[in-house]
Amino acid sequence: MNDAPGRRPRRPSIQQRRARLALLVGALVLAVAVIASGVGGGSLPRPPRAGTAPGAAGGDPFAYAPSREADFVARATAGEAQALFVKSPGGAIATAARVAAFRPMIDRATAGTGIDPNLLEALVFVESAGRPEIIAGTDPADAAGLTQILAQTGQALLGMRIDLQQSRRLTAAIAAVASGARRGLLLAPLLARRAAIDARFVPAEELAATVRYLQLAERQFGREDLAIESYHMGIGNLHQVLDDYDGGRAVPYVQLYFDTAPDHHGAAYNLLAGFGDDSSLYYWRVLGAAQVMHLYRTDRSALMRLASLQSASDSTAEVLHPPDRTEMFSDPSALADAYQHRTLVPMPTNAARLGLEFNRGMGSQASKLGATAALYRGLRPVALGLLIALAARVRSLSGGAEPLRVYSTVSDARYQQQSQDGFAAATNGYSFQISRRYVSRAQADAFQAMLDRLQALNLIAWAREQTVIDVSVASDAGSWLR
Image 1: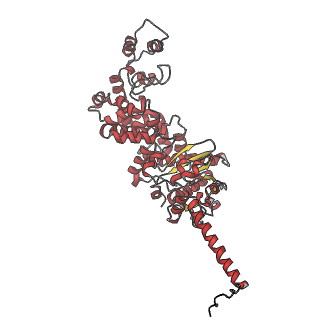
Image 2: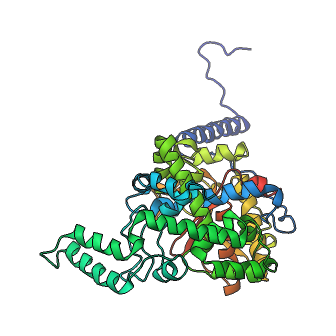
């Protein structure tokens, strides 16, 4: 019955007041949640609960397979190309222009010899960057000219006209005139006089001598790839590596390089790894230079783009993942969404069993963004898979159970902006950092061996920082982990 007009309303009971209060509190909580979701990451969904991850498959997933020989060659050529871009005087494009000017001379030198002119041109790119007057040092006894022939090799092996005493005297005079320390002499006549007594400074003669060397080496090894590799390593050194590998039998260089490891054909591996000046990488660099020259002639814009990516940082991370073609995570909400769609996966809980140890400080700045630290403890599945395989191989090679220490994993652009030690490449989820605090020399050596091998396979890009190693994983690395 309704209250009659003019009568005082009945006061609500204690139970009714409590119910109304509960409704009011609930509404306030909901309002705060709505506000928080609009302000920051306070209501972001947490990543899926981390679980265990399976260990790496037995054996070496990166071991050489004859059936994939062409793939190994292509990947090594790409993986070891950065030096061509960052070490070439004036850059790769300027070097390609200088080298291209000698192509008619190169074609004449190789005509009828069986030597590939493209490889000789690439050798010129690697050796002198197309500078016919260059000397590797200050003494003409050192490597000199377009293909950097040593005086002793030129005289004793290749029959070149080299008067070393006169060449030294004229080289000193040329240096003095070029620097302005000596006046009254013209540079051009001095260069002509030196060329007359030292054939290494006559490009046509040095190219012909280089062809003779490659023919001699190919007769000894029976293979063009080994002949090219021997140009830098030396015929005797390469014979020794082949002896250590399989009793001296000539095998494809790709097999010799990738079928050796600290625990497989160890003597040959140690000899290859022990040569200075990246000698074991020479063949890959020559093949890479041949590709640069091809792009220079056929697709200059593609070469310019590649040069920009190769020179962007100390590693080839941007070559593996060009910023304009790779999804980057802009803020915590982008990370949260990536976890929900399994684009990112949390770091596993069985780290120790996998040979890993995770930095407890990962994501320590997340609260400043209203986010949870768990968002910053994950990777793309392919990157996590390679990390697990890497840790397993390091354990196997080092003979110890000590873990690799993972300093950081995925991040986002907002986190990077407010972090003092940000790792920008981490914003794509393919990258992680490994602490350089190793537990033993054996672990450090094993880790370095794996960095070198994985880079040669173009499966990672890596760079050494003061306290960590930055590693970026190729998006196609999963095909090597099956």
